[in-house]
Image (tube, rainbow, N blue to C red; front, side):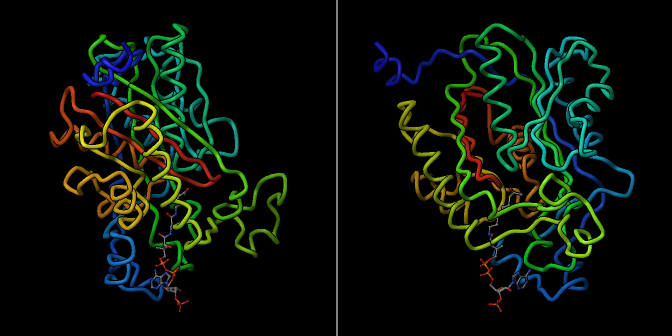
Length: 337
Ligand code: ACO
């Protein structure tokens, strides 16, 4: 019975995406701008990463502003009022302040008075972690309307004297409203994982219990992202490929049935390798890294929203989302839009 369902790609759906939105700051930093800041070139950045521009928040803009702006668009498209929202779950590693959670600020900005609100710290996989939780909450019957967001301002923790990292990151937020499925489409499967032995490859060491903020931590530039680029690259290629293979295998969905693959936008070479691993032609892969750079947890919901806005992903299309991030965290979500 189950095999027959899989052959027909007919699944039991608990939850579905009913609205999407994204927001990025107006200010743009181009590769040419970086040529004036550090020893780099447009050619190197495009060839090694695929990036051309990234949006950087103006002074005074905070992560919860971008999250709330993205959420308002998603809510309007889902026809959901602020009072209807039962939970707000935000994937972020660059919240407004150390604590409380950025989701608390977003709850207040939206006046979503009935929503429980909390953050997930899973770096670039934060949005997929949030989607898995939302799907499970809806399946359990506990909540009916969940606002999931990936929102970051990596520019605030980027060392603009370090050419190895500064060209990579941008700011933004993407939001999705998750509600019970209409029975014909929705989330088919979610898979998230962690490999803590790689935790130190990608981190911001200062400001926690290990290295509390001090004059020394500031002098040592410990409040900026530190990354072992090549090792992260190798681990990313492996973990995203493994996650994609696993979710397709476990769901019984052949790769060629996918309409679209959207991965975390960290580097076009990593995206290409993931597509190759599951034999997806590049015309079925959505890439917008050239416009936004790596926006961490925001990259997948921004790309997903653009894919829908551009008509690349349409109702009933099968789509696979795959991520990796500091932690190491990784995840995949397979759904019928
Ligand atoms: N401009 C010019 N040269 C540069 C730059 C730059 N911006 N950055 C590094 N280089 C130089 C290096 O110094 C090195 O020079 P050297 O040989 O004289 O020492 C040379 O380029 C090669 O450096 P590599 O690090 O080997 O370059 P690589 O091809 O690996 O590309 C990159 C570097 C783009 C960082 C790549 O390793 C990568 O994308 N890694 C993964 C990054 C990633 O995905 N991070 C995820 C973060 S997500 C999150 O959780 C926040």
